[in-house]
Image 1 (cartoon, rainbow, N blue to C red):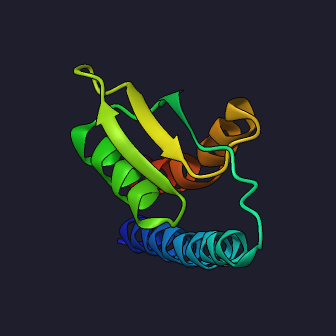
Image 2: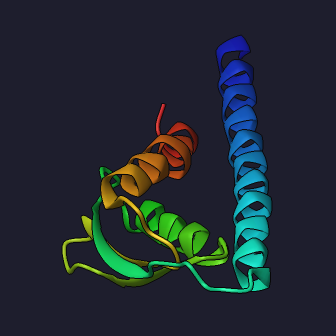
Length: 117
């Protein structure tokens, strides 16, 4: 019984962490988009890149896609038939590898903590 309670608490903490992470990313990216809009001259470099995910279930990939779409400045355009590659449009992209690393280290990591033990 104690193990079950511990597992529930760990999962609940992971869900709360994902929620707080999303809110932080929402605020930061929203601020960045507003900053870009208010500049006298647009200096953005929009682009599309392929993001390979380690997530496997449809639910995990869908959640990641939704979190990306809900974050200002990014949009999931398509998902490969096998669900391993997401095609993402970014409003301002300097380095696709850096942006991929950020997604992997934030959203994907938090999703894995929620969905897997």
